[in-house]
Image 1 (spheres, rainbow, N blue to C red):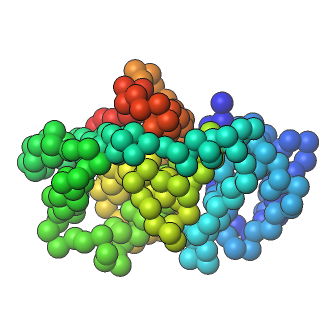
Image 2: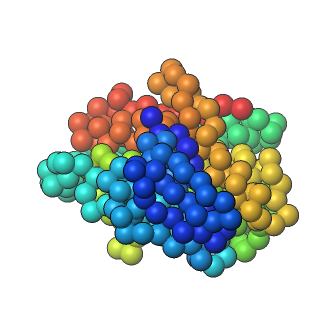
Length: 290
């Protein structure tokens, strides 16, 4: 089982040697590819060989590239993540509307429950309102309980003056953490043979990660909680390391302890099985625990 998250922040050359990732920087480091779940390239001065990129793709190791400000900007994804990708695409195109609407209700409910648990951890009395919202989520979230819950949640967590559209350290940290979660979700979608462009609820022509945007929703509160703990005055390399390391947090899913990065995979496969079959009971939600 892959578990290691590798972040390359200095000037370095990366290549492949006998199934090892070789990092040639100030020091020489070797890491066996079987141990790596995520590779983050923070520095635009890093160079990589084509042989390494091909092998990373074959092993379904997610690679995230950062821009000149060291913020996630893009990712490496294979064209096909499974031997039956063509059949999976045919199935995905024909997903039943009723199935998608039922699954979206469960995703929204799971997200609001996790938001509620974060507020409870910090003893914000508004958590009781989120209990009500979670209980009233309808098919396809037709009454937009997600939007109402988000307003109450963020104001309770970060103050009434906070908005998600502001350019401030809190939003910078949130966006960075969300990008990391989205990358892992996209990895698991492609690994299962599905296409990230075709979503369950999200349907933006210009968003190539519509399905990833759907599936990542219940994991956003995990990032929110960490940002509150950090109380960032600015987003530095320290905050970024902690946000990436969130993937190594131990969580409970399906009654068992798992690292968050592995729990995301278990959850994603269960949701994809559910939308294909219409059986909502197979969804394995990862609930936030303080």
